[in-house]
Length: 201
Image (cartoon, rainbow, N blue to C red; front, side, top):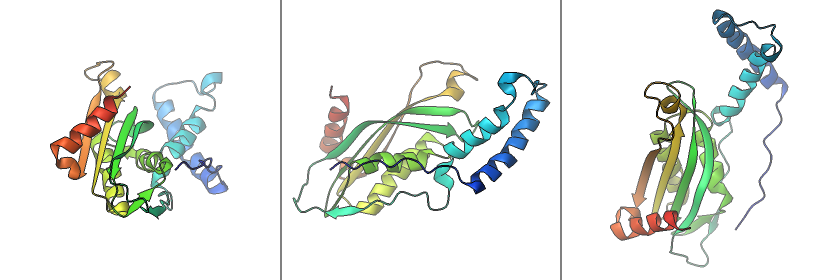
């Protein structure tokens, strides 16, 4: 079942006040780097960066957790439900540099199911914060396990980390793959079905 996505809420007055406070710190950093803040392209950079951080860290807000409505599994469906290649963006907790990629999320229902749009909402909620890919993978799996009590859950995330590509070892194109497995997905046959579906073109 598909559901209509609602747009993100517009910034409120409290957000603008917070953005102003963040901007003052960003401005201090730019000043320490001897940048000319009167240069046209840098004139409002401090505020743009502040608003970017508020957007990228939305998952930390009070009440930001998605409301996931579950439904009775009236059809007694016992096969895999999967959403593949869900894009996401996050910021590495170590350097606040972006990492991004796609997630493959599946579960095998027991008594409850969820609308398929909720996979993306759950992923987005945990991605919008300073994050580790390993932790993100586990959090998505744990959320589904707790919300649905299914027969099993499996999450695989593939991502590129700009902290690897831009600095340090500087290896453009390197991908990091993480997985989280719950329940019947520990069985080789079920896990291989998941991986076959991920590779399906």
